[in-house]
Length: 101
Image (cartoon, rainbow, N blue to C red; front, side, top):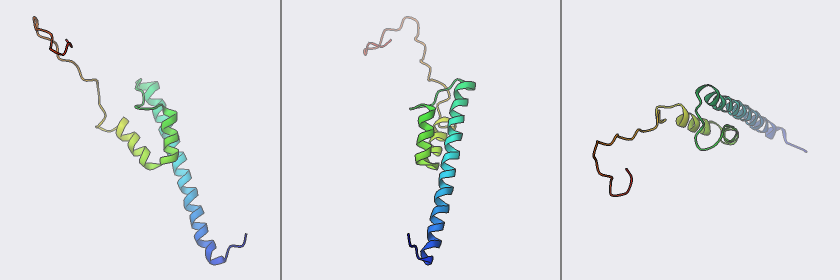
């Protein structure tokens, strides 16, 4: 393959940036996988929507954007801390019209 020397420098930068991006994606994927496993093993919290392996694969493909989404869902204050509790019924209250107590 004959590549002119003036095109070799931009090609080198493309390769360097591509390799750096791949390293970042792989590193984040490993971190997301280990965090998801930590959530289950130590806190007994499952990941939302999909399992840890799929989150890691999505991070390989999507990179930093998927990591930000993972963090927002699992670690930010937007995350639901506990399930909402139903209000206790007053004694002698009639059932609602929808049939739900």
